[in-house]
Amino acid sequence: MFAAIYQSYIKPGREDEYQRLWKQIASYFIEHKGAIGSSLHRCENGLWVAYSRWPSKEVRDAAWPGDQAPSEQLPKEIRQAILDLKNCLDPHRKIPEIPMEIVEDLL
Image (tube, rainbow, N blue to C red; front, top):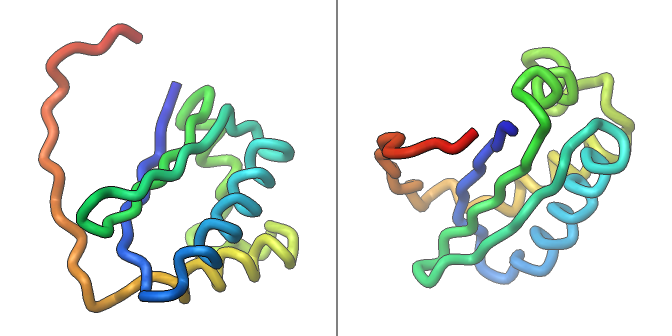
């Protein structure tokens, strides 16, 4: 399994919109692109963390074609949802680094 992790702070008053857009985008990738699932978390400090689960990195990479985001190969409504979701992000708050070291992996 492969997981992609996304962290962001959301602009004040945009949390409901962010959740709606996240669900629309995540559901598309689950229903049409092979994602196993996705989770969205809100942390106490206002940070939001989302991660998507995939059978492999190759499946995930194939679901996000090209270098441009969002890819022109995605349906128009999903491309727009990705752009709208990005507009919910607060660019003025720095995302904290989370240094991690694999201690144990049971894959």
